[in-house]
Length: 122
Image (cartoon, rainbow, N blue to C red):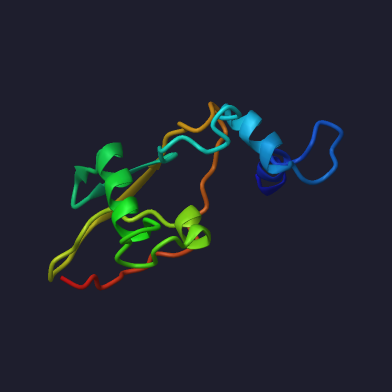
């Protein structure tokens, strides 16, 4: 499985690795040179689906260049992190399901590197 995932980022001749423009073309966003504002993971919080629009809104709120409340303009963290919603005191259930949206692939896999809880100033 890992080998198959790594193949996505390789060139047709097997050499490593795709340039940013080549990756944008493979993802179908070569004109804009950016990924679409979607997630390849469907999230739920306490059994309720988190809509894609809400994911984009939360991401901008935390990582926007101007006014991001967690890390303004952090493209490294922003490219890897996806806020899913505020949590109050108590027990919560976070759900994840892979649903390819950036490109179609029946064998797409998503690696969860970390679950991070961040206190946001009010």
